[in-house]
Length: 573
Image 1: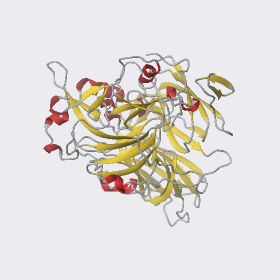
Image 2: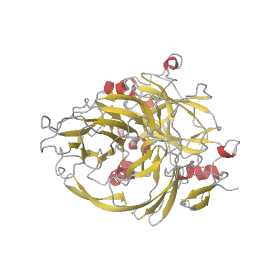
Image 3: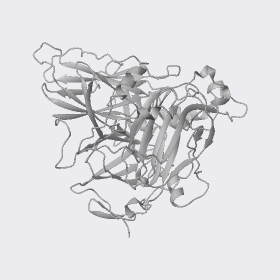
Image 4: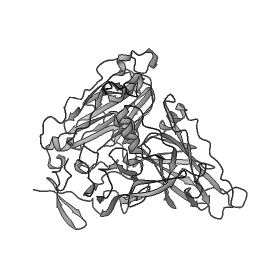
């Protein structure tokens, strides 16, 4: 029996049971045309890849439990895929999007219609290209409102304001990537941080395009904040105002109020802003929204810029906006203090369900490494003239030329190895100063190793940063799942002592966790979504270098616990 999904009144056979939008939900249709468009930033005009000529791209609107259909036409000059970041896609890995993991890329002149199945997500997510460095300009918001008949677990805002934080390169970033692949060195850093595609009026040639948000005194606004950047953790705040955080990664949190937020690439934050400034002329009426890099490792190149937008009260007098000072660029404590405040809401409508029994324990070390140069008589541009790499448990992930999902589904041999280890190959003081580490610790080996899980397995992963070639934060993203962040700390994880301090009552429920510099973070999830699911660092250069792996979750016994069949029309490699 085939699966039937109702898509705009059309019946589509996909798998083994009937699925579709939840009761009272509906379908939405979007057309995405990938094409070049000319944009000018920082006094430089260049052609960039866009969706429908827009940068950032169009916002997808839906309600909890809806089905969204997006027809992607590749009218660009290179291969492309699109990922729906934070959407669990239950039983539907075929349309998750990462290149050579769950699909072959959409080639120029071709198209692919993605089916995006929303389930428990409610809040802000985003979509982005998942091929090369294309998400630099190919990204946009996904806004998931409560189901009809339900409402927000907080006062309904007067208006919602998307705030997409990202980066801008004057050069063609994919050419920079090609050069880094050739030389084995770093990818050049961006020229500016941006807010909704604009660097703001602190930069040259940028005053006219600066994003402005108009507000009315006495009203409440919901900021839907997304870090779509490739390389930068960010602090964000609004001058003259505090922010009340009510959600992260499309899951509600217990409200807490702060002067600024901390957000890593891949993460989203929903925050309420009370427009409570006076408009009687006693105050300016114009306030900078400010985004600034947090650099956890200042020994490597980083973008030291501050992006601005303007929050502007109606009838505000012209004048220079008030400025918001943010924590210092290397203030690790400020980032840790913010993340410690995140707690799941835990209401009757949005309950917490933390697994208390763990079936599979994994300790995964995160490292920036090197591999031998392999350039004949030439030398690479990484440390000690080697080639830069990155790894999980000292395995630097190598993308295959056939996507892993097709290989798994078709039982194709030789594409991947199902022996990703549960712990690193050797133990040492992971967070010790790099000068105390022998150079042989720098090296890793390449491989396409995956972890296979039985359906329903409860998994605990402890991510452990290492000081190999420098300790730093790592935003680790898992496709196909949200997970509970049950613990985190600085230093080496102690499997005897640290679990005693886990939060098993109301930990945050996220899809991207910031592993702190020279520290660790512990997550738990129930492997109840069959399919092939990518896990990787959301610093794009780290993922490019191999800080990735794949979970394969096997089918369960019930019909509703089996992966959907391969849909027709998938691209071929």
